[in-house]
Amino acid sequence: MSGPGPQLQPGDPRQRVFLMVRFPAFFQLIVGVLHIVFSLLAAVLAALKVASPFSAPGQAPAVLDFTLGFTLAIVCGVLCGVLAVWGAWSAMNLKGYGLAMVGAICAMYTLTPGCFVGVPVATWMLFTLRRDGVREAFEP
Image (cartoon, rainbow, N blue to C red):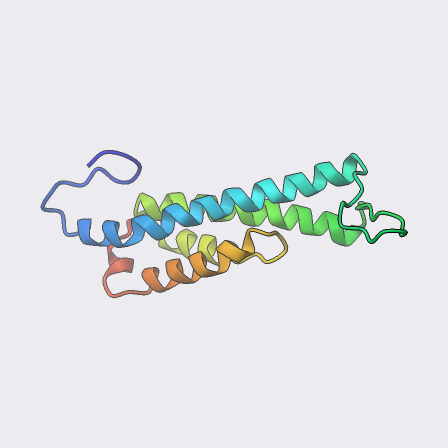
């Protein structure tokens, strides 16, 4: 089999688990990248003091400021995105079951627009990781 993931022989019993985990792990990888991109985009918009296009007419446009809460949200968004990508990559390679679980939980980070995709994908990944025989197929 070519592509990302372990190079399993055709008769390997882990092949079934790999096929179960591959699709949710791929989508979790995309969600992690979305969290990173949206977090960094928010930081760039705040640094450049870009005004919101959604301001009501006659009001001063809203501008993001680097407050403590905003900075923590950006840092947590990037950290959760990195952990989601790392966990997805571990799941695709059937290595590090715990890291795959942490990555799926971090994909549910709700302070970026990626949460609209992240929550269903992470739920799918968590249910897949809890299926019978999946944990045993992962290498320690």
